[in-house]
Image (cartoon, rainbow, N blue to C red; front, side):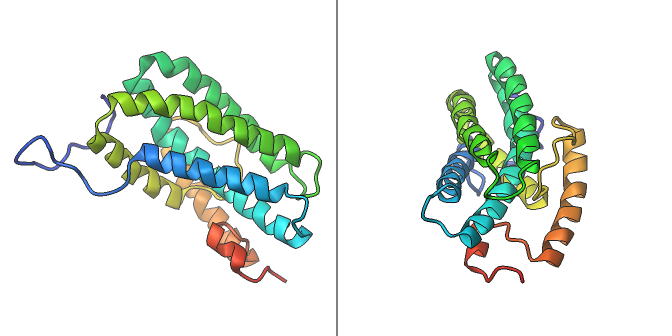
Length: 205
């Protein structure tokens, strides 16, 4: 696979396996989490307070996830599976539309929430179709190296939807972390919940 990553450290044989988690496994896990958040934010028996918290976390999770996908998954898919280029282009457009819809939400009672949830669910199906052939052609070491960069990218990524930011390297790898810093400052000031673990925290007053 031809992906612009630094070379692996010298190894005594070809079985060297870097530490970390495969990008493909990370994508699968996060997709399951996004679907669970979608189910919870639309659950009929959820309290308004709970739904507000879940929507905050869903918004942050989608924003981080799409940022990492556009920085590492999509370039890797283009390089390793050339036939996927059209799918990647369409998914970048769909990501922008999802971020725009998410940014426009007024809250969990907004009727547009159903559209956002539907977009997230369709995103999961489409991206799974990109990950499957990538698993077949990439080595475990390559997927783990990409996974390590994925996790670094998510830590620095925006926690709010910014559909106007660049969606392809190299500019997204420069702009997204800068936007992410501003988002995290706003999150800290407002005590906004951005991770699953935050849902057990007392809401802001």
